[in-house]
Image (cartoon, rainbow, N blue to C red; front, side, top):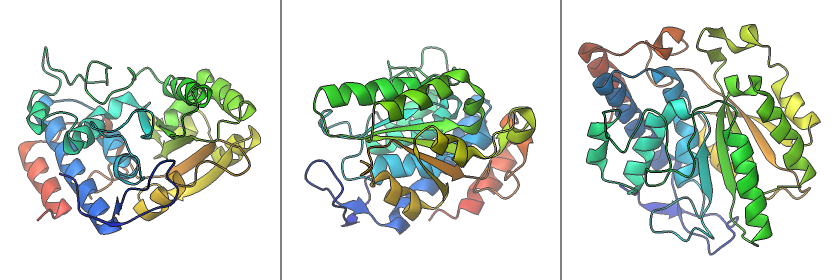
Length: 289
């Protein structure tokens, strides 16, 4: 379902299209969370907490710009989104289904043998631009896409969503060096900074602080944002290109398990699967009408 449009932006490279209201975007976020919870229960797959922490960033990328990814859009004009943290595939699948890239009943087959929806994104699925899941690969791919767009004279923006744990990977920092040197000002990286990795706090596994200052030191327009504040995310996604020619890094502070009180900031939900009763309780908290 596409929500009705009531606001607009002038930052689009093409003719501006209306953007949903913040209330409508929040409703979309709740619907995606409901799907994510159901898929984890149904397919018995992990990574529920980190799938819930990045919902607003996916909503902002798919509904919050004037030319977001669309199954009927012009690839040369519409913005591109890449999910580097491929373990949050359920969030992406829910968004793609709601955008009409494939029928919503495909979600029923998620993670089953032969399903087009694997546990990690694959280019064989409509709307998926690259295989991701091996940590630290999404940013270099997005950089290549942004560079190709510039060479081809395209004006669209490239958005990539990473986990904070990916910042442990050397390939991320090689890309962080390269993108500012090439002045890839239409590239935005969103870092889902939920402060957790599979086995512990991010800063205890490999300290990331001060994360904003590290990206800024590499030449990025680095900004700290509330990763669950849709107005803030939409505003920054529409601020590209940067007038100083820099790529943008949004250090998005988030809560693992966001939206469900008994899952929030509880790393047990990195691997734990909700029971039927827990699924019902979690969905009740979303208060979807």
